[in-house]
Image (spheres, rainbow, N blue to C red):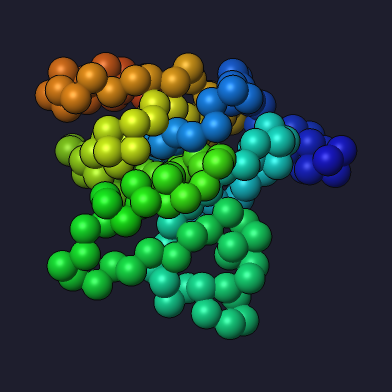
Length: 178
């Protein structure tokens, strides 16, 4: 653990503001902005330092030999992304099957600039009856901010501006995509 903190804090110069509440065993974690592949290792180091199990889903083809075991160890779960599949239901089933499951998603759905977030994260949280935890990676200040859990009301039009407000002023690795 000391080595991970050394890399994250001393070599890379990052800090963490806030923490994951240990009593919140299931949640959808939304990370914004997602502008670069660098977000992966910032997230992996944050997860290790916070000593919190954090998961992700990926296309099932990623989980074949030889990398499948590694991706599962890194918190990954395979997802059938064939058209016609109800992905919200499939992910909600993962929440039901596990005692502890914190799913991280990028609501932008891409590393490019978008004006509108995809809504899957919201409906997954509703269907799974779990809170949404807003997390930001601010490359300008090199700060990972972990906010308090947000309980979706079921009114996405009302909740989206409240969630987006957590990210006001946050700058991604590629500022032009923020």
